[in-house]
Image (cartoon, rainbow, N blue to C red):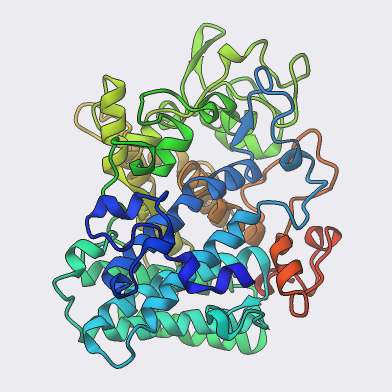
Length: 546
């Protein structure tokens, strides 16, 4: 992990500068940064802004393709996403930026944690960095299993860190969140945090809500574990539910977003999600906007299975077009209606599931980028999309975590249906579904789905879990789909078809360590083969081994 562990090389190019926009000037050489300027108030926001680029770009594509929400425009691009569709080459070169970039910027959070130990003026920064490092370290474990942690981030002192057991990492990051909570409770945010905290602007309540939501996500991931980890989970669930009063208070009350001051001044200054998938600073659509289409799978769900697909996973959608569909994907004319028209993953022109031409396929809709903001020009789109920032954890996700906790642990959490409904309402608002008569369309939608097991809050506990995961799939599409892929691996919901060209019987349970590890840390990296990722074995993340 040589390139990942040298702190000087990972500090963002313009960290010596002070304005929010300077955190985005990614082309300036890191070597130009003066050492005395590498203070927490500069390093922390730079790390947050830069690591989100991986979420908004690489992980956005990976998760949406794995969850069969996106497909490729095979009319204009020859054989798009063949690796993701066939899954025949999930090897040490498959989506390497996830591992490489998350570690790259976690090193910055670690730098802040350990900056001038004992100097209390930086304690608040330490707490924020503990939360952010735990947030991304969980993703590493959930996608890879064992990983460097206790010996990582030490720079030249240790270029070949040992791999920690993933169970131990989970315990450690949970405990780091508890340490961060203690700091937040006892430490006032210094004046510099107001501008350096590009997530919550020094709002301690919001940081503690975020921490609690992350804790709940960690504990729910472990719902199937046994033995010592089950004991750990149950103890922490009791403590968490006691501290938060078994209700929704104490968890996220709004979306957790980052925004270092995105603008349309140039491409580097733009929200990376907007820039990559919709429009650049010159007002032109990037290639990716024409590459990405809705998948047939999500189109069926959003359209209410209006063409009578017989798959059992689609029956719960019958006759119920989703009011969110035009805010997630563009509608196109089809058989005297306006629908989301998708492409079957793996289908090429002339094959079943591929429309007759690329004009009749749906693209990413404006709601993903600007919510309900009024947009009539490209300039409006750029301004509103940059003002919005990037989502780390949505309110909808946090509410659905509470809904699941209420199903699995009803003696500790008691807000299941209300949190489920709140999650849907929040997502309607997030993507800007218009009000009708001054009333959210979520109200009517919730009433309709609550007669449909697997889609609404009705039926057995298993059916409610399916409904939670189905609504989470819809809410995290184009927001944080890699998190949904992890949830799919944990629960098996929603049922998600493979591409027609898939060469394996199921989706991967984990990823292979990147080639950088096999080159620079070969003595420690586990020898995970391509075959290992499609079966559950000792390399599968611990919470999914049974």
